[in-house]
Length: 424
Image 1 (cartoon, rainbow, N blue to C red):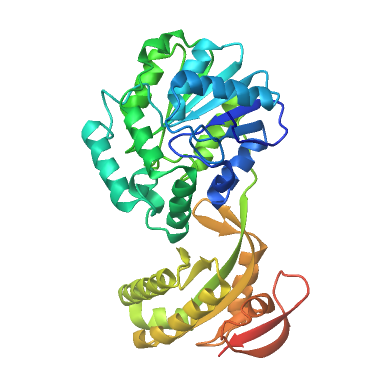
Image 2: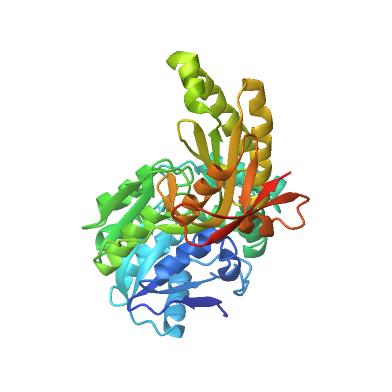
């Protein structure tokens, strides 16, 4: 029997990620959110994960393993990875076997983390007998595509990047027959009788609106496992890396290390767009408060419409302007051009400025030097003009966008001279 496994990180504590429904240790890391999750755990633990029998790169035997066989496989993986004792992270269908292993082998189990899982699906779950039959029919009809994305990850079920990865992950993780065999096995799994025998520290994590394994299943685990602590998380995604993964990672890190992390702000490369209404002070004085508020509302609605159309993120209104970010500089420039053109029907003009750089994500806001530079570039633009830094201009080569050089200038509070360009 050959099992594929992977070790990530060199932390002082071993953590075995026991996977759920379908798994493939290599393809899992191809989706960016999954890679980020694994890198974060690997910052405080040595992470071991593996493909179960019938899945990924492990051997196929024609049937899903029993709980006893799965425990033997976990033993074998831990031995091969040189792990004497580990924290078990049992996710979804990986939970029941992790509970049985912890009760049977407390000498090999340091602690138990249970996410979105169950002791038995028989009593209470969306996936009861009728739902299992419906899901099997759905697999028959749609296998090869992103089957069940609306159940496993509703927050990204319409995201093309996720659905493309999910469909590939399912196809290469198992076969159609293998997936249906797993669903059949779920009808029979029941580890409720052994919950009271678990004698290791246990953390139960469960999202409030999980549709695959509803919250009462997690509450049942916390009630019946001695000393277990339940943490109810916001959201409806069953896949633990989708949605607010930091709330999960914070709990796991504190549970495993005894210390809650103080994370540095997350930083990402973004194109920052600032818009500003030309002559706003004079216009407000002329129109009066009520008329000015109405105009600002129409302006903000127009800006958000174009930001959404160009797949940007509207950050906030700035009174007489707007701040938005984009993951592609060309889309940001085209959005700014559309805004400048369309606001004319409101009887106003705007100036716009863009810069691409590393931004700090601060809740729903952004910060950092890139944001500061974007604001200064915008301030240099003339009425109806879209002005960009040389960074933006260089990054959109080949996009069809054309620019006129505006020369070098100093930006207030920013070191050095900056070359600016106006989008035609």
